[in-house]
Image (cartoon, rainbow, N blue to C red; front, side, top):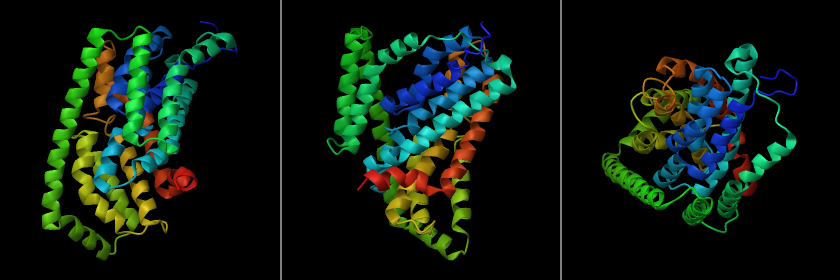
Length: 353
């Protein structure tokens, strides 16, 4: 390995950026982790990254699949709360970018303190970098068409998703990466995921009906409002509950089962003089941020198990150790967004109308 000043330790940060890019056209954390793990792990091994850093970075980077719009959990949150999907997507952009930059900073700190964890690779000429960027231009173009279509009002999220899915399918066929077996597997996978989501939604609708009949969420909201507890203390307790639920439940189940209960509580409290509409969007992004922690913290941490299964030579304990610094970054980001809602709401207020 070259040790010239021009060398870079950019493989892991690049993988994190790639996770963000893939999440922008995927919307699923598990799919992002599985796909980027297959693509990036061999390269990280080739550059002799430590097993803990390589798997930890990819497991954490996979969570960007639900942070960077479009995001499946945000769509479910919008359905449950009757919130605007487009505004939620817009609100998630800056927090998602902050998450990506935070993960890159964590990697930089780790390789600075422990150079052997991420050895420097050879300097890559500018021309080769430009060729690499050009090769992903079609994917970036699809992302821009989908996002600009939603935010520009040219298409609703469903129409934009259809355009994006069709464009990705055409690109896969043209590039030679999709054949009949791939098409069949894609259709079956989509059918299974759709059936699962609809069954969960049916169950959630039944739960919501029961909660509405018992008036339990409204009574709980009134009790919290009259208890004299600090609104920030109540919000912190709710977010901690999500962290603990992440030990035993997946992200979708957490949102479906808890939002009908916690949402009325939060909407009945005052935070930073926010309007009801701003509060709804801000809380949705906070919930999304905390829910993604459940994908990478023990003992469930689905992203960790997916990445560790791909990296067969890395002990599971090393992967859990490797993801801990990224969890610290997550905690700092949640505190930042909780005390400075303007970060979440800036794009919505500027472009959301």
